[in-house]
Length: 293
Image (cartoon, rainbow, N blue to C red):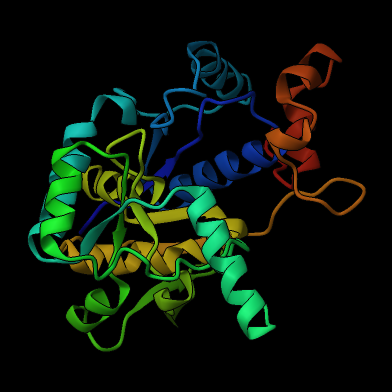
């Protein structure tokens, strides 16, 4: 019988807040209930924003909450070769293409189309304009020349080619907190030709998380509802790379008094600040619905 494997995977670009605490505690609770394993993964591919002080703070905050996890801790910044190998597989099979468009190029193209049609250009689930496919059909000679000159570029998934190659009925198994499972169809086309390798680093969140979950043999992905739509892309990439698809649960988000989700970008109160105010781990647990002291 396969032992369930859960993971909590924060990015060290700020201090953890109550939303992170809820996700970490929920993963730990479910791992304990199922006699499974709990892993910690540091998602630090964004080397310009991630800092060592935040890596240390993550361990400090989770230990303060009473959590324990297996060693060693996987750090994404140490495994770019894994992501490059996965990208190589996608490239060899013709599922990606280089895109030389800058953000300004994309904004200008979308604005031009909106002006011509009088309607808003389609958006992805995150609200960003879908890529209009400018570079999808560039001549092979031009592409080779521009790559040879090391022009800045990303790599995008060719969504049409990917969907043709993937199984006809893509779906994943969604579980609730009681373990009841349902089949959830996916619609990755709503993301358009999403970026799978960024300009500044040889991967993206979508590609690295899929590779990591496979390498670490994750069986249960428990994360916030803000990442539910991204699961469409992840399941598609798993199919294209012949990787296993875990079970997924997307939990409700912890929100502030205005109803906004807690976020580092909104300067939500951190666990470190709560600790400095004299709040105990037991009080944090109770406030989040975990009654264990």
